[in-house]
Length: 402
Ligand SMILES: [Zn+2]
Image 1: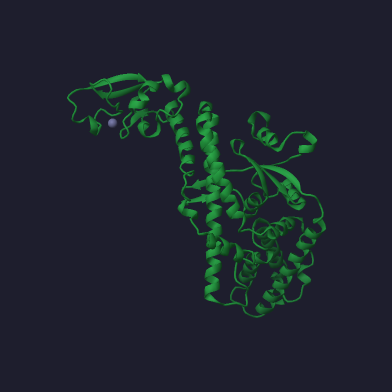
Image 2: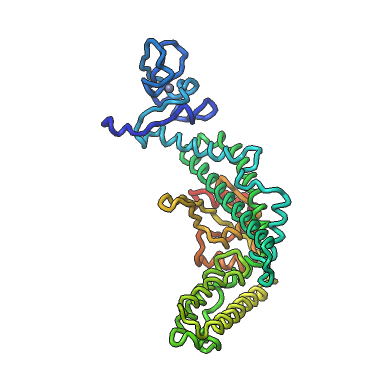
């Protein structure tokens, strides 16, 4: 192997300690540099600062298991980036990353006081913004802070999911890590659950249910004949069709009350009118009326399903990813999906990456339809299978069963 492929600098001493089970890697030979004393630190670099004062430095080759308690914590070992030891330490790091969220202190991301949380929940139960007839700066600030609290809980909860799923992958790739990782994963599951509760307290179950009905609505066919849009002239049919699909898409994917998703429809009108003013106010008023009728239609679908029993489904929670080009986290889940998981979760099997949700039928139908759904959804039936929920979740998460 050419020397140039040894391009990865592995900071072994920072990642491994005697607690981490090494499995078959215990016997991997490791070339180290050491001062001639028998029990001195082992270094990956001959010119490590802590060897500078040593009179003689020698190269020794030891098995990793033997070397691990003497590894220098500051220097690194050069090896190919795909060396088994590099891949293994990446897994160990992922478990340690999970462990870093399990301390007694609340993460500074979600370090809100109980009264902050309670006030945010009280505000958001009414809506995302103060009622339109109130123009009080203090109220606007209060709602803004409430939305911020919800955004933080949501982001942190999803971040913890990703950390848990990374630790799962680590254990799958290196199964002998399982026993070491288990208490860490158990502690992380507790933190995830408390974040889920905090986030769910800031959501509206009625809004999630209304949104579930939106994809069932048929696209209205009589839009052009609606009064109030003469100002759009020949563009009316096209603009109103786009206003409908913009509204339906936004309303079906968000956790807001249906009325809160009006902006994408308004944007279509805004673009269609451009700088023209004639007929604009009438058109906006007519659009408000239209959106109100769409909301009412969605709610009538909800009402027809109200008596149906809840259904049990399992979903595989997908991780978030980091978009390094835009420098931000991307979540494959829509707000609505994230909200549904948080609101209706009744059990979780984190080593399997699956959670069970007990959802109103309308939501179960929407999830099962697969339309715009970013997570894998399976119907669960404990009666039919005779298996307890925990067992079903484990089976779902077992890759050999898929
Ligand atoms: Zn060193």
